[in-house]
Amino acid sequence: MEDPVQSILWQTLIYFLGAAGLFAIGGLPLRTYMLIRRVKASIRPTWHILLLLAASLIAVVLASQFVLQLAKCLLGYHCSANAAGGWINAAFIGAIYVCFEIVAFAIRWFGGRRVAA
Image (tube, rainbow, N blue to C red):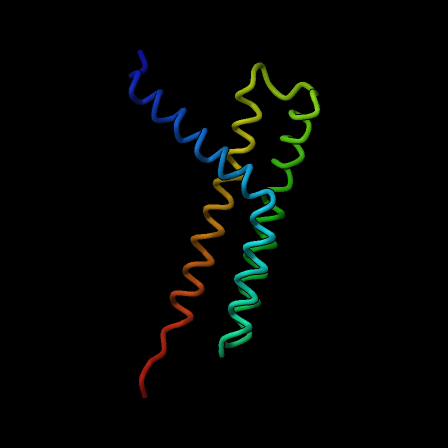
């Protein structure tokens, strides 16, 4: 028997990640542009830009399969037994976007530290 609280927590996680995934479809390119523009405006090494571009490209490649599946679901094609299939695809996109934001934060955080000589 499954605990009802655990079921509610899983559903909440899927819906929050799904909402983040729906945002990420347009937000990932915009966020990448904003991060790169901010790095270019400051005096930072070029490797910050290259790492941000690499993280962005990896996120886009990983999310592309789920975006296509989500588009099929929205266009009315059969994607699963119920509406959960679309939310699960959107949740995977959201998880990829959250991982991208964590990597971008780590690049900015650790890249901004300087060692005094």
